[in-house]
Length: 123
Image 1 (cartoon, rainbow, N blue to C red):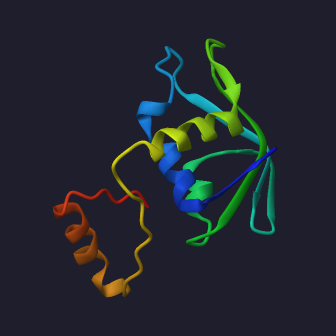
Image 2: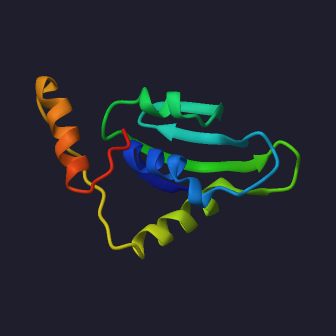
């Protein structure tokens, strides 16, 4: 059974270094056999930040299948289950994720305001 998420949430998952295994491999590989982004199916796509950032804001993403592994074979897990574990961990934190829209001319000021208030801008 897959999991439904958003572009913003999956980018947070992708960027959360505390949730990825500490391994001697040069990087962790994530591949989705079926990652559905709106009407666009990314079959056997590399699950990478450039691909995710290229999607429209608020895009709905359904991950039906996939695997996370390292290059040397020390770590392997199901992508859907790994994401669900991360999501449960986020629910235990005393913080909230929000989507903010502003005029392009005010983007820098809004980012600065969020960061000065202790927030983190991920996208």
